Amino acid sequence: MKLVPLGQVAAQVKGAAPLPFSVRDAQGGLLLARGNLITNDAMRDALLERGAFVDMDEVRAGQRDNALPIGERRLNLWRGLMTRLNVTLQDPAAKGLETSIRGIASELGALVKSDPDMAQALLAHPDLCAELPYSVAHSARVAATWALLALRQDGAEPAALEVPLAAALTMNLGMLQLQDRLTNQEGPLKPAQRDQIQLHPKQSATMLRAAGVTDALWLAMVEQHHEVAGGSGYPAALAEPLPEARRLHLIDIYCACFGSRAQRPSLLPDAAVRRLYQQHAKDPTALALAKEFGLYPPGTVVRLASLELALVVRRGVAMNAPVAIALQNANGEARVTPARRDTSQPGHTVVAAVNPSLLRVRIPWAQLFTLF
Image (cartoon, rainbow, N blue to C red; front, side, top):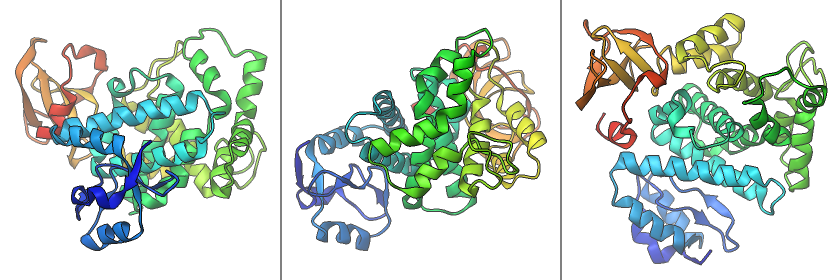
């Protein structure tokens, strides 16, 4: 890391625009993550006056990215962030775990705010997490979902999300390898596996403490994310777990529906939200998830009344009427030019969500989120 004063690249920091690189202190610690919005010139001036620093390697990478279309740029940011998360979670004993996780959490919150629909696509379609281990992809989905609810339902700012997102990203530190093995295990859980699952919230918190994490909310959310009001959860059977832990628990359940395992396929988004609502109808988090994702969130492959297969890219006027891009015609052939479909219009209504494998064309993700 080659740190230089922020003032040397001040021209690249603009008001009402996202940061093209992270801003750091003199020791390299993260002050403000890349992608966070500089809301006005006063915020920009405050950063410059603080005597902050930047990593020149990151500045140069940002300059290369700025030459790309906005959709491709954001997609590259997502993929780069997922790569960093994977590297960090695979070696939780490495020095600097807390700093790394906090930085990833901060950047993830900023990315979700910059394009919530692309964040939903990360959850609903397997492509964007296809190269990640199940355990890492699941952690990323849970954190992105928390950010979506907090930003769009609660009106929170990205800066307030760092600790909850850090908890979501690290809640399963104590069983990451087991999670990955279980995705391919066809038989029932073995006693040792069941014990590890029961104990992993405490083990994860122990690993975080060993890495220097002292934040009480972070640790409590991790320790309690499988506790259930009334005392039926684990590992401590708490009668009244923290509200933040209860929300994390329900988001965890919802996101688990999208990960396929040897013993059960993944659920389609409409089935996932219906199951959640049926089982937890009185829980405000379940209501918030249903409101946020609807039946066909971005990333869902749908069959239209026209018999075309389309990819949902934006939320629409109603939860059952999103904006979709037709990629495959009624004969199962790839369209030469993707076509925008407003599914609230007759002839283009959504008939059903379908398995993404039925779409036999390569999805031009960056193009879709740039043009539509």
